[in-house]
Length: 351
Image 1 (cartoon, rainbow, N blue to C red):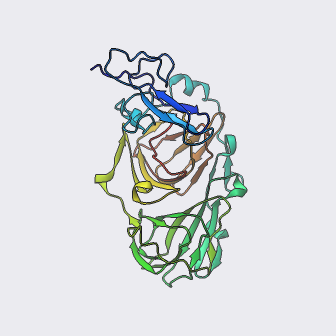
Image 2 (cartoon, rainbow, N blue to C red):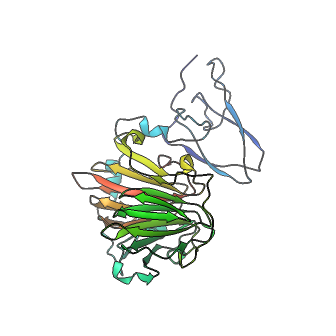
Image 3 (tube, helix red, strand yellow):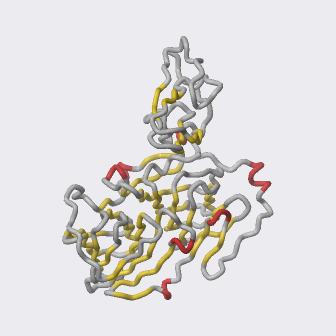
């Protein structure tokens, strides 16, 4: 049997027709009508994959490198076609060389398409029930699929904090302590990820210095509600805390990531990951999800079509769905970040 050819490195974004309509995806890479079959596979021993639209007007990323493990859909395998992650070309660098840095106004640097970089002003956080709560990304910022809040808890146990019907993932940015989900306590440490099911509330207590959590909530209009408890612990997903584990690290050429919370751990709507990138500038690309990125270490710049903004540890980046962007690390030691996005999926999938 012949080997499949790489038709193109990146997947094809396709809008399908009515739910149930059948399509034949090219698996051999020889079709002139990518990503669909045109019969060129004859004699290769490679058959096309027939699939159906799952919803009316469904947008999908169909694999064109023909290396996906989830045909016909892209799974990010194209990132392994090279030893280095796709970087901005010399032409792209020259074309953007004169773009000035966008300054932050009121702690927020606006980029194209509603994207922005924000430096959280912790002095403006609201205090209630032992919590310090600071909104970072909400519907007021143009978010439509998620919200992001910075939460801070001290030694004294907080009051319950509810998130309504939104699924929530928590990233522990600093501090050790205990986070109680409904009535179930979980010890946590920095760079842990926690999964809170819809309807469950949380309480927290730090062991020493204040514990800082970043809460991503599905739905842009869902706000944390201090003093709102209720909601029994959902025992169908008992494991809620996931820490950094080198054995679970996934490679994207010379970049790495680990999913802390996502569909593989029982989440339905949000993926939370931690990533590492070397000194480099990624090639401009898009995602089909809405995303926030917290810079943990390293410095650099976030680029969009015609704008760029500096990023430093503690900054948060917001990227609307389909927004063209490129994150550049200028730090010789590399950059470490925590990202969350909705709808859930793989951080490796881009187009």
